[in-house]
Image (cartoon, rainbow, N blue to C red):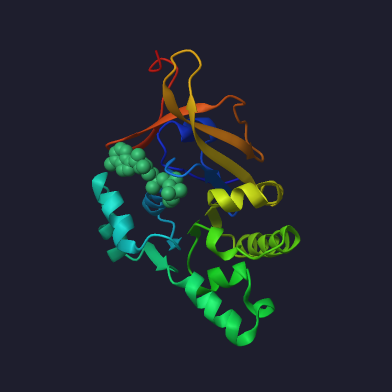
Length: 235
Ligand SMILES: Nc1ncnc2c1ncn2[C@@H]1O[C@H](COP(=O)(O)OP(=O)(O)OP(=O)(O)O)[C@@H](O)[C@H]1O
Ligand SMILES: [Mg+2]
């Protein structure tokens, strides 16, 4: 199975990238680095010449570019080449509410696969940051149904996808989403029982067809993005 390097320092050595044409879920605490992880993956996939769409529902393109600028990543160049495309769905929540009043809830709610109709047909990698705002009124059964459809359509189009579930959505629907996805990673802040210090840890919950460690992996957000901390570095 072909893989696309995540671009996260240390992670590619462990899982050798994300399986191409499959969907990976990224969940985690607020401020744990989900967006940074996703931007880092977007940069990496573009550098591997994969046409990439970054669908953003919470922050606008300007916010995201300020974040990547702080790491000195040249996203502008990737955008000018047409390799990277940002799709802003910031107003979606408001639009859905309005549409719900006009045409009824049933027709609109949680039609996830509509999300990817907004992106160019040539995209090979799609990142959704995040899915939360679209799931507000779904029952778990409806969520699973819509989510399966989305994953099915992504796979049909041979798209490699990274979908961020926000914490509220992930608490409510995590289990369901985990079954459907090919892989799942969770980012957390935890207290180290030995040092008493808080640290950032990553749990590779699952990654089909891949050897994965059972232990939490410690990582840091540094001046050039996310890096895993190797055993020898971690005194
Ligand atoms: N240039 C930087 N250097 C080091 N750390 C940074 C830098 N920029 C941001 N951070 C850290 O990363 C955190 C935010 O990461 P990010 O926005 O990816 O989190 P998130 O999981 O997407 O959060 P949310 O749930 O709010 O969307 C900040 O709270 C800050 O601690
Ligand atoms: Mg975020």
